[in-house]
Length: 223
Image (cartoon, rainbow, N blue to C red):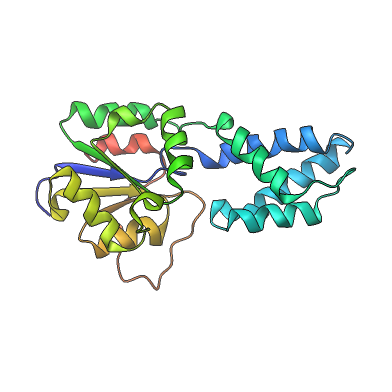
């Protein structure tokens, strides 16, 4: 690998702490819609919502339909009302990952060019980025819903590095998902740094991460 000039980051559960964000949202949701439940029952519903959400990797409309059907409502709530509540309130619970802003500043101070590559709808991901105050750190932001390509398609990483004006062998990708972040970026010729969160590594993958980290601030000893 040539000398690193650029770094691409994933958003959800890499720079944005989606675990805590969704837990906070679910807690508020249960308080607002299921206030008749006893505390232990309410906590069970929160944990069930988190489990059904599958770390954000399932279709949201199907998720809301399921919640409408299975939650212990006092008065039933249709899926479209749950969707509207989610759209209006979810990002208010948004939290950056521990050390995220400090590490982004460190990377810029060291002279690296930064980009962001994320899957999701443009308006939703843009709102996350702006609410968390992250936009200023990136020369390029590529959102799958805007460009019509999604991770792990190698073309989305290529698009990002083209916008940064660098080559793949000069670029690192940092993310939490073994396939969408590390394998996909590797297929595009980038070296990956795997932020180990919820996802177990799939030993069937034919690409391995260059480095593994538990916390983002470990990047300072690597870069």
